[in-house]
Structure formats: structure tokens, C-alpha cells
Image 1 (cartoon, rainbow, N blue to C red):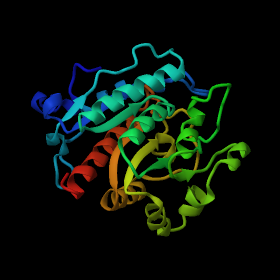
Image 2 (cartoon, rainbow, N blue to C red):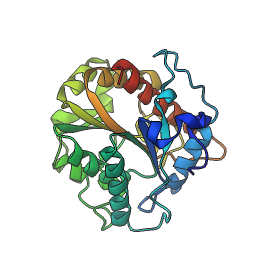
Image 3 (cartoon, helix red, strand yellow):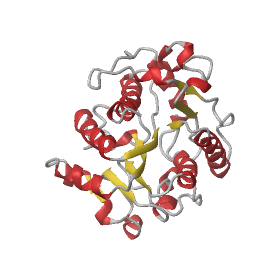
Image 4 (spheres, helix red, strand yellow):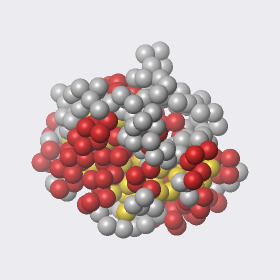
Length: 288
């Protein structure tokens, strides 16, 4: 997975020592409970990236010139226990944070975030989590496993403010753990954009961003493990994310739950465009 460069960029922009950005692919879906296959997400993501234009019109930038290094995946065996996977993700994330890189991750299922959030939380003070997802992911345990993908935000919610955007599916058990004041349900936010400023005000100085692809409406992103009707759309999502990057310090992010479909590659490309757009915002809006 590390033989090619991201988006086919020249190798001089893909060397670790010259790259401000690192991309960690995590091909793991062992705890998936409906459709399996998100372990193939990182490979499909990198394949789709080869067909993307490297100039971003909106920001008038070519962010790849900041350097994007693809880290060899920490997961060789996608059937290892989730606790072991999380430790591997934690270790490799911490390694590149120590090197002062802007760390990004591509999943794989959402449980990978447990490891990355642990690493970011130990590296940064005053951190909050911006969680964009169709599901609350606040179960303390699911199928006997506290590291299941349905538990991805539970541990974080006990340590950091977790601002949740786009939620439209949850178990009644999660009502005990969800913080209403920090939750922006999709049925409330579709009416107007007033929620955007309110959500940003709840974030702390340093923000870790975690995006589950199923936050999007399945009409534009059908290739995901648990598609939910009534999701967010492209330009409204970008409008919000641009505001976040303008007003807060995004310290890193992950994008998870891409489940590639051989007959439908538009979701793969959407994820690539989203990834590149986030980098463009990060390095253009603040001249980082």
C-alpha cells in the first residue's frame, strides 16, 4: 500500500523528511456488524486518488506541495483483536505526532479512532472531538467488546468534549451517555445554518476531527457499512468544515467506514476529495 504516492504526486513531495502531512491507512473491519469490507477502504481510497486534480479551485492552492507521506500500515492481519489494533494505531499515531507531523488516518472501521484519539489526547491540551456521523457510537460495549465500532466515541466522551454532528440513528441505551447540548441531530440542522456557529462555539482550541462517511446522505455516498437515509450533502458539509478550520486549530483527522463497491466508485472519489479539501483548508486558511 506504500509503493505508490498519494494521488500520484511526485516522489519529492512524498518523502517523510520533507512532508508536513502523514497519511496512515488502517485496513481493519473485524468488529463490523452488518456489511464487511471497510478494510478495503484505504486501498480503494489510494486508487481513486490517482484520478484527482491536484489544484483546489476554492483555496487556489496545491496542498500536496506541503508533502504527503503514506505510512506503511500498522495493520497487516485484519483479523487481530480490536484491542490489539487500537494499540497499534495509538503507537503509530504517537510516533508521527512526536515527529511534529500533521497526522491523518483513513479507515477501516470507526474503532480505529479510539487509538488515534488516545494519542492526540496525550499530545495536545485543551482538545475536543468533532464527530460527524449518522450514529452516536456511544455504547460502552457492543457484542461483548468495548472496542467495537459502535463504541468509538464512548471512551473519548469521558475525557473530552465531543461535539456530534449529523446523528440520526442510536440505541435508547445511548441516551444515557449522549450530551444533548453537544449533539446536533440531522432533523434539527437541516432547517437552516444557524447550528454551525453554535457547534463551533462548543469546540475547544484544539480539535480532532473524526468523519464517518455515513454522515453523508447515501444518495452521494452509498458505499459505507451502515448507510442511513437523510444525511448531509457535499456543499453544506464543506461550508461547515471551512468555518471550523477558520476558527479553530484542527490538529488532525480521520475518515472512516468507506466500504468500496466494485460497481460504484463515486464514494471512493468523494472520500479522496474530502480528504484533499480538509488538507487544503488546513494549510491555506491559516498558512500553516
